[in-house]
Image 1: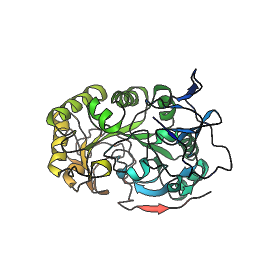
Image 2: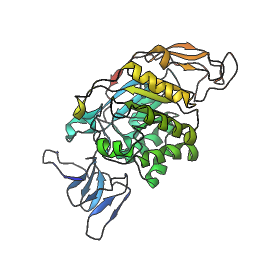
Image 3: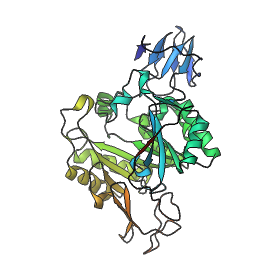
Image 4: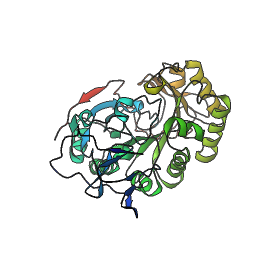
Length: 369
């Protein structure tokens, strides 16, 4: 699917950065090879994501260097529970998305077709510098999927690593093989959406197939050193059946192992599914129990207050390792090596000698320039 360039777009004073991962077809169109959509574009057309466009016979990235805003968040909000817990992360995104999820919880950015939502701008070096000045341990590529602004994302990651800042990606995992390898080469931690375990669900409600997401998860586990966690938005009547949750949990343990943290988050009526009721807490708890019964060691609920299901426990002795009250840490029983202080069993993750103290604060910032 492609879209004509809207006339409301302001003219660019400088040419847009060229985009990678594309090739010219025999009929003169250019095919984008970044994600499984493989949009085929003629002059002045945009891909489904709205970010990648055909200009002067080449694919360009139209949101490079521009953002919908910057905010310092708790790392647990990404959500990442086993990556530098309690620390602040400088978060930003752009606009658009390569998925068309009818249930999108961030639809105002992911479905935007106007560049005026990109109210701030910053070079990769400025973002890395800001993270350092704000004492953030990491920068998160989030709010919309960083896959679609991969060139900007990689440049930001390189600038951050030069300053010792970690890079986090929050993604749906819908990406082709070559860009997948290029992208995750620069990423330290990721949260990947596993929206369901049903290809029909993906095609009907998201517009893309399931398999590339599974491929991304397997790739991360077996081909990289990226720390990653999984999130499933549990939608009543669509992906919350016992059989689907059981099959999904079995696949996760078999293909990814028992140590990948898994977050089950609550759906709130939004976008094109405003008639679907919010997810009850007991449904999230049932999903968590299903994962744990299949051998997942670190399963969590999210978006609804539930201290018991949001805390981390030693899978050997059951002691609370990291207590959480929302995004605030309430207990810390890990040694400097990341092991249980009671029995010495290692807890999987990336930990500091002591927890961060950022808490649940959300601090919007302006960068510019």
